[in-house]
Image 1 (tube, helix red, strand yellow):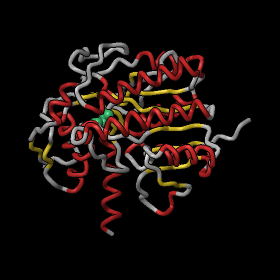
Image 2 (cartoon, protein in one colour):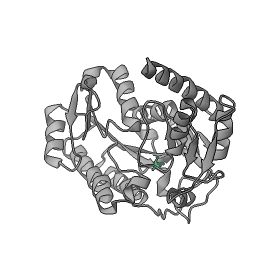
Image 3 (tube, protein in one colour):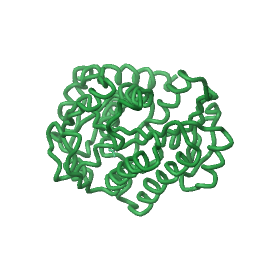
Length: 318
Ligand code: AKB
């Protein structure tokens, strides 16, 4: 049997940091090569700098490290992408094409491509959004992810590349503060509450979006990657759901821990992006094909976020 050797691109983003740790726990530290354009600490080894547009370097790493699987997380997100649409298209789409080409050339065992609720748009049913719906995304991030889904499907059908993909909702985690996303408010708000600060929310109080706690997102990703290939009917991004809430509902849940916590709503350009997405997701295909099941609802997520961030701020004050 071939030794499993995993490469993660964009490994220092919100998902990558937690995913890398989990994969290292599971398969051993040396089995997981983390790559990114920046290094966040000296104990990340094995680590390699990688700009995803540097295809020569990418190919060298795949060859030199005898890579068998890639989790391709490098991307620019929905809000950040609007400041530089062409760069976002280039990184998000051309980065993926390089990965899919290498997967075919090196006969990699598996590739993971993160898709998103940003593939949805104004023509998509907003409630309990089914798997196969009209996609007319409004952001360049959404357009790049929609095209990415189609490419994944194409490489699977045409070249038999074993590529697997999830449409992530907003991810909530305590390990890092995400940047450039429209769902970022749902992480920032916890930091403000635990630090005793007022939170200025960039979305309206009643903007409902699908969300997921990081542990569910990581477990779901690994479960999909370990699923029997013959069971996977969808190669362009499984709908995936756990919970949906508004900033107002999240605020009330946090107030059970911090009754004096204050919030003001000052919606900016991200409001329009959020309104172009859907409110809740039908993920029955994921449940049927590979037994997806979330563990965290709103209250469980709020409890663990507050517990972990209290520890974090207490330790950093010492
Ligand atoms: C974003 O807000 O851009 C991301 C996403 C939903 O893909 N978190």
